[in-house]
Structure formats: C-alpha cells, structure tokens
Image (cartoon, rainbow over all chains, first blue to last red; front, side):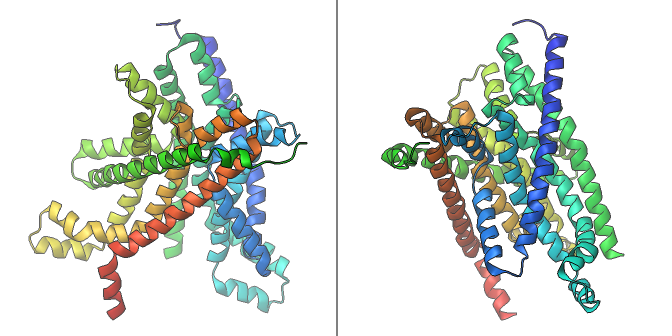
Length: 218
Length: 226
C-alpha cells in the first residue's frame, strides 16, 4: 500500500471536479447555441438546408465522441493549427451536444400543436415573429425535461477529455493514482463524485417530466 | 501544411478490419448479455421483493449516473484487486454488459409498464403464473413497443465501445491510435475511422430493422387484417 490519502490529493480531485463542471457548462452553452441553429435548419422551408443538416447530424451521431476528441486534438495540429486540450475538448463536446440536442429541440418545436402555427399565421405574423413570439416559448417548455436529462450525458462525456490530457476529474484521478497507486479506491471516489453531480439532475429531470405529463392531461 | 494522404490508412486495411471485427464482437456480446441482464433487472424492479427492487434500482441509478470510462477502470482494477487477471477484451465485455444492462433495464421497464392492465387481469383469470404471464403475455408486446429505443441504445453502445481502447482492447479506435502514431497522419486516420463508425452504426441499424421485421412478423400480419 502506498501513502495514505492526504488532504492535498482530495483538493486536487476537487479542482478536477470543478473543471468537469466548467467543461460541461461550456459544452452546454456553445453546444446549445449550435443546437438551436441545427434545430431551426432542420425545419427550414429550404429543402437543401434540411438535407445538409440531416447529413451533419448523421455524421456526428454516428461517430464516437472519443474519435471526435482525437480528431480535434491530434488531427487539427497536423494541418498546422495548434489546439489546446481545453479547446479540443470544448469543440468536440459542443459538436456532440449540437447534434443530439438539435434533434431533440427540433422534435420539441414540431410538438407545438399545429393550430398554434396556423393561428399565428392568421394574425399575419412573419415567420420570425411566429417563431420567437409563439412557437419557441412553447417549445422551450416541452424541451426542458429532456434537456436537463441530457445534461447528465454531457457531464459523463466530459470524462473523455481526460484522453487528450485535459485535467478534469478522471485525469486528476489518474495523476493522483500515479503517486499513491490505489486505483480501485480512487476510481470509486471519482465515480461517487460523478454520481453526486449527475443524480440530482436525473431526479430533477424526472420530476419535470412528471409535471409536464400532468399538464398535458389537464 | 502537408498534402492529405489517406492511403496510409488503406495500406493497413488488415489491422483496420481486425479492429472493426473486435468492435462488432464487443457490441454483439454486450448487446446480447446486456439485454438479458436488463430484462431480469426490469422484472426485479417491478417485483414484490423489497430488497431485490431496491438492489435493481441502485444498480440502474449507479450505472446511469457515472461515466463509462470510470466504470471500465473500476472493473479493470477491481477484478485485478480480486486477483483475477483477465484479458482487456474480457474486461471490456464485462464493463459494457454492466453498462448497457442498466440502460436496457430502464427501457424494458417502460415497456412492461405500458402493457394494459386488462391483459394482466385476463392472464390472471386464465390461471397463468407470474412467470407465464411475463413469458407469454408481456415480454413480446413490451419488446415490440420499446424496440426502437432499445436498438438506438445498442447503436450508442457500439459507439461507446470505442472507450475500451483506453484499457488497450485492440478495437477500432485503438487501431486508429496505433496507425496515427505509426504514420504521423492523425487527421486522415481519424477521419477514415470516424467514417467507418458512421458506416458501422448505419449497418447496425439496418440489421436491427431486419431483425425487427422477422421477430414481430405475426403481429404485423395481424395488423394488416384489422
């Protein structure tokens, strides 16, 4: 057995956990903005815009996040761009989020009852007005529970940033493990830290879903 | 900037093919085992035994709220702590099974819950035991309802099997890592491998679609008459 688990190690893991939260927020924010674009393009009146976006979604959803991560971190520098671990992780996670969240938000927009679109058209609102004043506010309500649920997936996938050397929770654990060599103990602790971040979100998402279900029956 | 040269990857197509085969193998084994684990877990979660219900619930929540990467490391180091030294492939299969088992449990539970009460009451009236009710009445109908959700989960599993490269299971991503360090052509390598994953997930979806047509044939024929 190596050294005991000193306070310094715990602080280091805590810092890693903060970076996990930070990276998740970056991915949610940047990915969310892209996802909105993806969702709006998927319901565009132009056929080629819809097709191009469908292709983009198929490509991203068909590729593992890990391969995206490697492509950004090792692939781009070979084309002459220098990429830091944080940038590589943020970009690949944002792409991943944009494809999945984009599809989910498109479904939410299309779930707004047809009559709402027609009514807005009857009031002679332009397409932009219809979207921003009538459809999107209602779509946000429909999209909220699955989006909160998806945040759990984002947090879990930030663990993949460890492979490009970004010091988030898993990488911090690996570094601590290199000094004290108690892998099982450390990964158990890390699993618990992830659980304490993800579980509240899972519960919250389930509550929101139950609430949304009640409303639709009322 | 150098010219792009994709031939370095195609020159090593034998390795790439082996990697793809292992990815497929991992996916199929974990899908089959995980489906069985998940189905039993879902039955356990809906059962009358309190401790079993809680145990299944804890398993599902623990797996669904932690990253696969950490789960793989835990299985890897946990088993070696127990004195078992297994190959990276066995560890990968175990970890993937445990992982997808929890997700399929949640999906199957939703399917089981969607069966109308009337059918269960009718089955009970016919004097079927709980086991017979699950086997003859619930299972196939539930499976048909959740089949799309279940198959997309299995496609996600295929993609996440790439994480097994981190404990040096020589599947497609690990092969890519090797080729790029051998040729210094990371961009080309990962682009090709990414496309191969797209292809694999497309093929997997077609296989599941055909499988679905074969399994649920009787009901489809019936629906045509109604």
